[in-house]
Length: 422
Image (cartoon, rainbow, N blue to C red; front, side):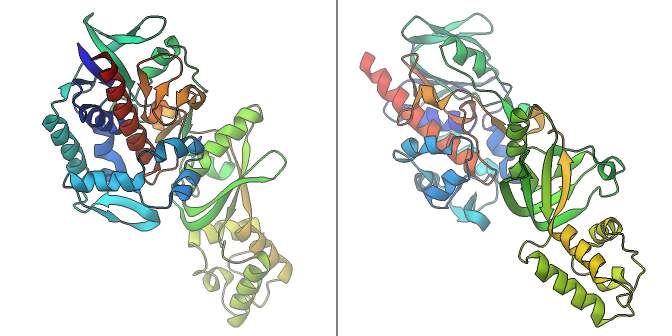
C-alpha cells in the first residue's frame, strides 16, 4: 500500500514525486519507459530550458492555451520558486534571451540527475518499464492502479503526469486520456501546437524556396475576413512541405483553431519581411537605393536589404526583371515590390501530425480541476499535472514551467490528502 502513486516520470511527474515525499508520504513513481526524465533530457536542444524569468503576466501571455488557469497554481508555487528549487539542489541557473533559464553547465542531464538524487534522498520508489493498464476506483474515490501484468497496487492518491500526445518517442502516447474519461473527466479536442505548417502553394511544391530563412519577419495568421488573429516577429523557414521556424511554430495553433472554425479550409498567412518600417518607408528605402547607383542592376543594388533568394522571388512577383537598372525602373513597380516586402500572403492547409508537434493542445478540461491543489473535481484522490491538462504554451520554458508548477502542487496536495488516512 502506498500513500501516493504517480504515473509518468516526465518533468511534472518527477517534481510531483518529490513534493509528495517531502511530508513523509510513501511514494511510488511508475514509468513505462526505460529512462526517467526523457523529455527534460532533450528539451532546449539538450540544455534544458528549465523555466522562464519573465514577470508572471508575461509568462501567462506566452501560454495562449488556458494560461489564465495558472494564476491559481502560481499563487502557491511559481517560476521564481522553480529557480530557487533547482539552485537548492545544486543546479545553478543562468538567464538567456527572452527570460529563458538554463543550467549554467548547459547540460540537461544535470537537471534530471538532481531530481533523481532528491527522489532517492526522500525514498521515492521508482519503477521503470512498468506500464499501467487502468486506474482502480469506486464511485467516490481512487483506490490505486492495475498494471499491464495484472498486478494491482493500492494507494490513497494517484497523480496523472503522463503527458500529452506530442513527442511520442519520450513516452507521451496519450495513455492518460481514457483513464481521465473513466474517472468522469472531459477531454477537450486534442490538436498539434508548436508544429510546422503545410502548404500546397506552387512555389512550395516546386521547392524553389526550400531552406530559405527569413530573420525577424513578422508572420501573421488571418481569419476568413482578413482580420489578423496573431502576429509573431521571429525567424521563419521555408521547407519542402511548407513553413517552419520559431515564428511559424508560434502561429501554428492559431492556424489549427481557425481551420476548426472554417471547416478545415486553407488559412491565409502574411509575411512582413521588414516589420520595423511601414510600406511608404520601405518604398523610399528601395527607391533611394536603386537611384543612388542608377546604372546598377536592381538585383545587385537591393542585395543587402533581404536574402537574395527572397529578393529574386519577390522581384519576379512584382514583374521586375532582375537585370533591369535603377534608371529604367518605374515607381509603380518599386511600389509593388515594397508592398510584397511588407505583405506577402500565402495559404497554409494544415500542420504536420500531433506526433511531430512539440506540444499537445487540448486535454483534461481545466474547469474540472481545482487550480490551487490540482485535484480532480470528479474523483477524490485523483490529481493532474503537466501536459495531460488543457494548458499549452509557446516554446521558451513556458510548458516546462507549467509542468513543474502543476507537478509540484499536485504532488504536495496528493501527499497532504494521503495524510487524512493515517
